[in-house]
Length: 459
Ligand SMILES: Cc1cc2nc3c(=O)[nH]c(=O)nc-3n(C[C@H](O)[C@H](O)[C@H](O)COP(=O)(O)OP(=O)(O)OC[C@H]3O[C@@H](n4cnc5c(N)ncnc54)[C@H](O)[C@@H]3O)c2cc1C
Image 1 (cartoon, rainbow, N blue to C red):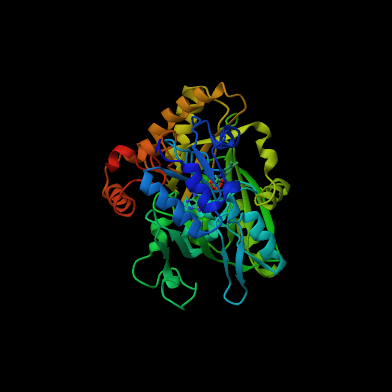
Image 2: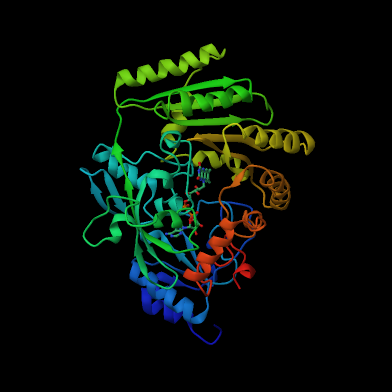
């Protein structure tokens, strides 16, 4: 690599204005939203087309240079920071909405279209994507789908983005081949169905955090906007009741009633469970009926519905304006992942007994959201001073170790300062298959080297 002028090679692909190797450009890309150690790319490139990405990957393979991929940069588990010196693709310029198909209720976007922009444009036509995480206005559709996002908004009803809303993907593989998944793989068929030709290849890329390919286009399901909304808020006094409520949403009334639920427990009041709810429906009567059923459940279990203003504020601003949540400092999530509805007891016990009581750490709250049949649960702390990083990483690692020995499936794997060590320590058939896929598709381990799979395991 030393003898080759990589900057010139990259410039010949994208032009000099969209590539840089200058320190002052590169430094802002050396951190993510976590206390992960600072890691510097050698080059930052801003591609605009899939063909440019093909060319960049060709050069990377030829000269054995790792390539990392950054969407909106809002993940917080060392998921795109260069684990070793290499090229960082800043995908920000591939942010267009390519097609809104009102009749078939699909939308096709480039990966770095933000959810905020997408929803704004869809709403002009009375449509919406609906599902969303809580990562704020910078998070992109591609970044979110590539790490299989889920959140408090609508995922109680529809599941993680990847579960049902992704129809087709266009991916550039590490060797530069372009793949369309689902019906898009069949010439002339269009982007209408996720699983119809052989295995579900979109599923292979969703959640892979970019290690198997660069996403260059996505087609998603959309739906009409509902003109009616109801939010509810209650405070429960027992986790058992929260669990039963989770089952009620999931089972008794199906996933029809709530489009979102959010649980929050403050470390200074570890036995008070705040539950915010987002009621879904297209007709006023239906919303009223659903609301009544939920209120009836709450009453039967001795709970009151409280002033819903905080729930309105929270759910209304998820897509467009949660910037003030950073007033408390940067967020760091740990002890986070997917867990069965009943088993959230395990995670809560670790949080309360190991973190709050034994270690006396009272800055981290406990929360989660119900997605069908499970929780996406987490512990989260805020920090302002860089001096706190080492302490937070040490604490988070200790807690992660306990949590991932149990039934918590890690969520957001990332690199060595993320959860990669926990995934790599489980020698399962799943992990062996993942490594086999990676070796086959990316024999030189060019894409996202050191993310999700340690480099040594691919040699
Ligand atoms: C306050 C806060 C709250 C959050 N709440 C939630 C939540 O409720 N649920 C949740 O799931 N997350 C949450 N997040 C995390 C984060 O917002 C999400 O993970 C978001 O989806 C990441 O999108 P992004 O565009 O910023 O992706 P990035 O962080 O840029 O990238 C995410 C991953 O995808 C890869 N990637 C990005 N673009 C591509 C591409 N085109 N092709 C292939 N790979 C690509 C990256 O390499 C990386 O591994 C939260 C974050 C914050 C700060």
